[in-house]
Image (tube, rainbow, N blue to C red; front, side):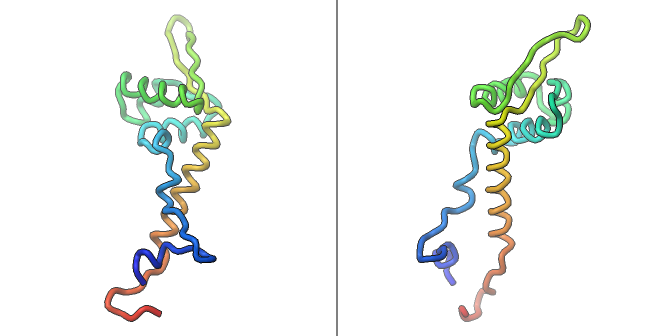
Length: 124
């Protein structure tokens, strides 16, 4: 079986490769981390995200801006006592984008774990 044969779907139509369903906005490591951590809590603090994702303030701020502009998170600024704080909340759109990303990743894993013919043996 060739690579072309293995991508053919039912009814003779080709299925798109699972990587085509990956969203570049979501798939980037830091942004995926932000979305997954935010999914685990109602609201997550900037300092916690920074520590969990091992990034600098500037790097995290830039990724938060991308996610906020995409409508995937909301960013709230406020104070705890006299200390400024920034909190991140996952939006419905962000949750849907994360779900779609996870679905695409599962499809990719299933594809890679599917039994493949052994090289040098006749196709069956």
